[in-house]
Amino acid sequence: MKLRRIVLTAAIMCCTIPAVALDINDKTFTTENAGKVVFSHATHLKKKNARSPNISCKACHNDAMKKGVHYTMAQMEHGKSCGQCHNGTKAFALAKCTVCHKVRNITFKVKETGPVLFKHTAHMQKKGDCSACHNTLFKTGSNPRVSMADMEKGKSCGACHNGKKAFTLSDCSRCHPTKEITFIEKDTGNVTFSHKNHTSLYRCGECHTLIFTTDRSKTKVSMKEMEAGKSCGSCHDGKTAFSVATDKDCDKCHKM
Image 1 (cartoon, rainbow, N blue to C red):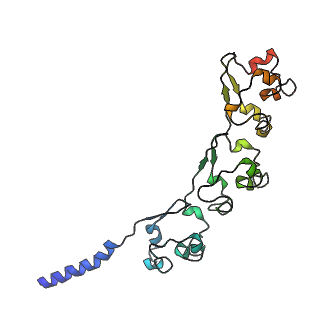
Image 2 (image 1 turned 45 degrees about the vertical axis):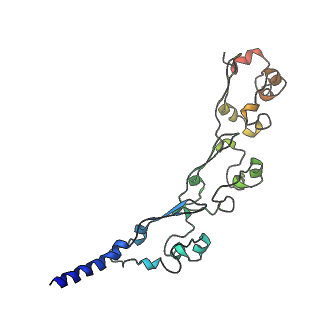
Image 3 (image 1 turned 135 degrees about the vertical axis):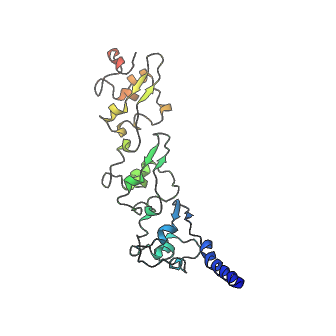
């Protein structure tokens, strides 16, 4: 009787040990250029319904998906690793990148004009359509800085923002946020320059950078220079706009 108990206990332990040792935790993969990808065992082992057969681990862990082997997207597209099922037939296609690779908004620091916010969600024509930009226009990692002159030649954002596919690059304030600027003037009172008022009448390119640079440290100009046609005086000449030379209009800028 005692021997039967020992044998029974040993049998139960043998049956339960494999279940305890089986690791079915979520797995996080860190990619070089496209962020982290979380693989959920629970989601992939979930049966379609109560009558569906249990999903075998060997359905994925086979010669096409070996442990410790890094598979590229090109290899997946040829049926390796995730590509065994994610081919658009068994499961969603690999082209639906954002289902696995989580996208986020990106802020580009531009010293001259302030930060530029790039929204992935606004640019994706349809869910998961990343191939329109990656990697033909932008790499999925860090990218070299591209000047506005290069964009006007069709590089980077300029490939689409040409006035045909999307709004033209000359609509600067769509990406570069403008704000009201206050110039400190001790002698005559502070002067507030309103981008809102001026951009309602003119385009950014009519002033920048023909008349003004986008660097505020280089915009200090005397009234004498303005009267000679520099800075504000290029428009405020009494013809295009009220003149900087007449005393009666001083209070339109200088709040004294």
